[in-house]
Image (cartoon, rainbow, N blue to C red; front, top):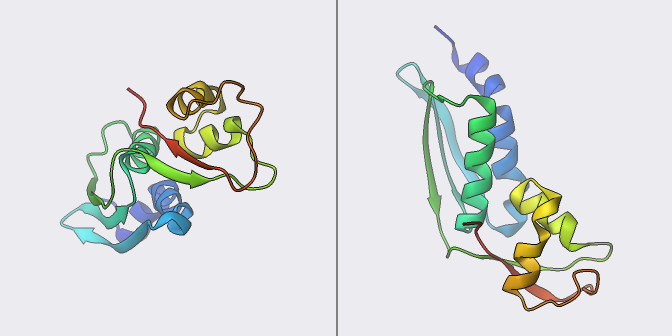
Length: 130
């Protein structure tokens, strides 16, 4: 039987992923035990971020039988993002999808004909992958 510290260590990548989206409004409200399961309660700003957290959960443990999660989505399906200096669509794709090669989904959703031509300050929407 795993204790709280062991489960926190196991699921540290999940907690870190939620916390990494804090600038977008994500937060972890609680990390405790629920019986013999780690209970993570929090919220994320969009379905895109929720999908990213879900991907990390499955990477940590595909069965996640020792995890109980309550992660609310506070916004819509897409995630808005303001392009920062040095950003590329590949970098944004890596952040939100965990894969830099999915940048075309972002380009298409925003009508960007040339994915290499984005500028700092530009507002884009990152759609959920289908």
